[in-house]
Image 1 (cartoon, chains in turn cyan, red, green, brown):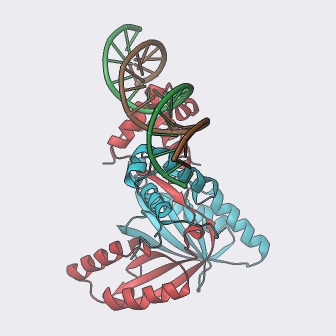
Image 2 (tube, each protein chain N blue to C red):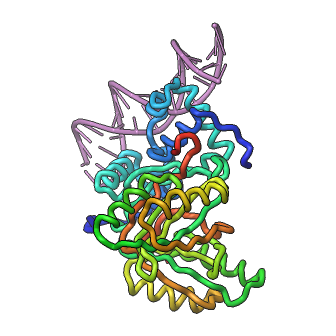
Image 3 (spheres, rainbow over the protein chains, first blue to last red):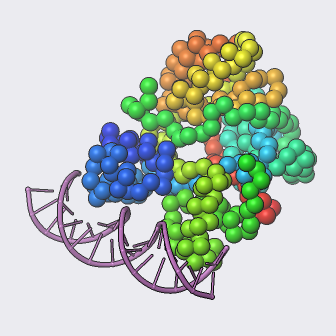
Length: 160
Length: 160
DNA sequence: TCTGAAAGCGCCTGCAT
DNA sequence: ATGCAGGCGCTTTCAGA
């Protein structure tokens, strides 16, 4: 999966599509100094090879009523395979959890949570996370300010 | 900015575009049971009002050599306005930092870091974060597994 | 591989409802 | 607000280098 050759132009295309994923192929072609047909073939190849996994609209949280985000560090009560898989199923079906990673360190998981307000978060924490998921300990931190929003992954050679 | 009325169809459109941001307008229109022109108008309005902030290609980390991700909790040495702004400038210009939030709790910031490998991370930590950014203390956790990748924000009414 | 041309399709503006 | 119709631009395929 990691043995796909990407040349300089591929990386330029990826950088452009991470920045602006819906620009017309003609425009993209001009930016990377290629003809539209050659550019399209490269994009389609990147999609087929799974380098580009998809495209997503970036939605402004406040516009849809997401007024509070939190990062919740979680430790499970039971580290058996079944408990781990059950926890994975739960976080995948809860919409408030917008991302979840298993981490090294003294806590097992880091959850990125998006909710309307503190009351919504409280319900999520008490009714769902602490009640259903087999969780032993949680540690919540609320987002005060987004210093750097996600704008895409760093690309080799183009990066510093 | 938060006083924009979104009806049920707007939310359906947002859900669709978060899932698949580059689908043709005709396809989107059919999915939300609208004519293409009516659908396009709504999408353009959502873009103009800033509800849709943009579109982004989703790139597979491993395909571009990002083999290690980490979450780094950071405490600043100095909490003056200048030190805070300097830190913000640094994380915004470092490509390895793919997201950064100021948090409540005993640490000031949470950095989401994407690098090639542990050696790359080591250079980032020692040369950049600890050396230049006015940092007092750091706590790094590495991503073992992504249990739930980011797939978009939760939308009211459509969510549970 | 790329470029260039030709054909088909979808976008996007009118205007009417 | 939605739907319909037209011009226009883009996407996409196919030869040729």
